[in-house]
Length: 427
Ligand code: CA
Image (cartoon, rainbow, N blue to C red; front, side, top):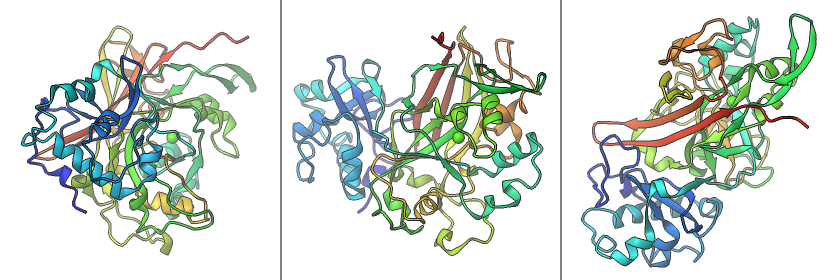
């Protein structure tokens, strides 16, 4: 089925400012609550949130086989479970109804009033009910930087890393939507000075610039997903900030890897940008070493050109860009990640979340963590207000942005933000 929604010549009758992440070619999916306390699945064009529950009820999806309450839900899981054919039909229809040549909704004020909201007047919620959350480790530059910082000889890059996408099982319960405040977590760390473990609020609170993909139910328990079919089951992508406490991580990670240093919070952007919408920005993955057959893709065009910019906004409102990276830095494609995740027969479900791991580029300025940008605290970053950072201070608001651009169209993810607030008082 053709993805007619992506037509770069389309214009919407809803106004879209230049540089906006949400032109009619995007049509992302999210969940929001209106001022009247109605929770619905919706999409966004320009500065407008579109209630797809009302849109469906008023007949604008006529002819597409959908259950009556498909969009009147507090998560996208059922819609995602319907599969790619439905996603395409729905996205194409939304694009048609909001196309500047279509007057069916444009000229119906009564319908417009119940379908279209100012995006600033709705509150975005977590878009999916996440059953399982895997976090991969797929940027080679990030893996190399970490090995260099900690002086790791014969680390993963010299061993298993180039042969399979490494990952670990994260916590789904603490994935929160953009805008949720992040309390500085407590943890156990090791004092080099006294050579004893100590307890207190983390002194090395960090961000991790990542993207994540969300799947539909793809395979039966015990049956792998072939690498060349994997994309069929990927609904779309979000920005992900996988908050980390480096001091806790260092002490607890031997030998099983990170545990509490990652599980306290992970923030995601609220609008899921579909893989279909990203299609014009498809590009090749970096050259890969010899692969075992189950990871060999039929072609190399399995990555996407997505700019990733990261900012710190300080308490006084000053904004400093601290990193500029790109999704095309990841070594292992999303389809290889999904093929690897399921090669042992592990089943994935609608709404499962798969993080890319920190996405760092070749130069240190393009790194996706403060661990790398400050070289584990050895190098101070100067923000625009003159203050210095190695790791995050209370009051810092970390803002991730992601977008794709060509000569005709720009689409993006909006923002993924999280402000650090002081630790709670322990009882
Ligand atoms: Ca991570």
